[in-house]
Image (tube, rainbow, N blue to C red; front, side, top):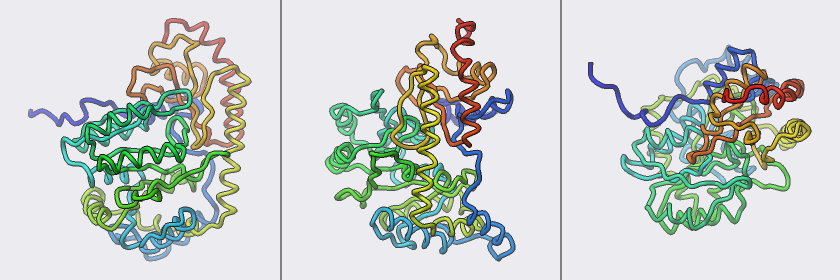
Length: 392
């Protein structure tokens, strides 16, 4: 038999998805894979029921239903101040996962270099490799997860084709400041580099932090591919509706990539989501308030338990430092945690390019009752870890 492709030789399966399977196996509370255990907005579910009996069961236009693109254009203009042509500047994809891959394949050729900040959402490095590009990892240094400007410029001096910026960041919860984004923008212009942003958590930013749309920085719209999805904002991770926003020239190429990757997103779901895109400011204010409350419950609970953690500025993830437990293998530790403590987390090594294995990631996109029960189970962690020395 001939050998299989070697594209995946340098990375393993997703540890995030693996931990969900382990969570199910042991009946653990799943704080690993970031999806909520509560319903999306009622107007969305009501519209979904209506769409089932309407004429949206065949292919939509490849780059997304007209209704969804028009609604998304208005929503984006409201929050960013930038008017996008729904026919020329918007491409609907099968989740932000495809949006990122589509963006990478739009700008990169085999052998190009791509800057990736570390820690990073695990798909980014894999996206670069699957595209045939070589990732250049630049550390975001804990506990504040800031970058060294000189180290970043040294990466840009290698003339990368693109840089990936996740803001707010998964897994650290970092929100890049305007000054940090301007540094990145200046380097992108100086070294003629595309910027691919993942802004899926744009509406989950905690005061006093502010979200800045990277494409709005001077001179950046023409070289920025903004990737996002509706999964987190409307609690519909299973709907797999994402998008790429960019200038005409970029979207023209992205449409061709998308067409041959997936043809198109699910037509009924694109129609059903329109009422959610048309929700008023009160929805987003209340939405953020809900997550602020969940964050307070979880991080205050971790503090009461005496666990060391980073305080997220955005998104809904918390990195917990496991150094006190003498963890040598964070994958084994997370498997033990799910089995013996009953709470599932993601090993930090899934996110760091550096040799760092003393972090695990929890998420708090759960009902309050679920979070309180998770904290109750975690209250046994220190005692059980003390009895499990040398296991992990």
